[in-house]
Image (cartoon, rainbow, N blue to C red; front, side):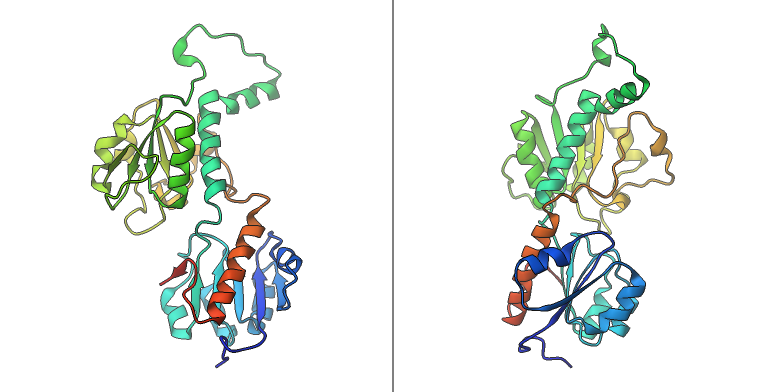
Length: 296
């Protein structure tokens, strides 16, 4: 077995289809050996060299068979459900998530969606494509609206949920939070437990999902919860897709729905934040310390 902690050198592997992680890593002047791959086939060929692997979507649990030196995985994403804890434990591989690296970006994305839906920006873009100048509207119920004075219900008050509450306050919104523990959260006027979700939903103008994907949250939003919401309310999902119980992809065709790709956290600063976390965790691992965002 490789003595990773006391090894003077180590090799870091970066595996992602698009992100420029190795460029960011090299820009820091790091003396560590490194490589970068873009496909699963290439990863299978190179993973034997890696003591540290920086990866998310390309990961397959069978890869450990080809990775005799691997001791640390730094996930590129906050979600880590693709990694088998049992497999990693058996091989003595530690895992750290990227939780917190995208809290600013994802919270801002949620606010952007709320503003777009309130100001009908999706319809304005459609009108632009049709070269249609929308006339003024006499019916108040059909006009654009404002966030000020609206109620936002945030389901999940981790780093993203807390950041979103902060931003919502700046827009003059009242924030209700759904949280397992009753401890107060800055910017959240009222807290309820998960068991009270159905009771609190009718009060919300916006419901934002910022919770992790767990056995308790998978399928959390379904027919009964949607029925409990106001007809005028908006649902904002910046959590994992399976938090919503959706059997089909009919949403693609709904004019009152905005669909964005998995891009909420994918800003121009993402590689910088991931490499910041990676370097800190490499230093901690070599020192025999606990990792940031270590996953049990």
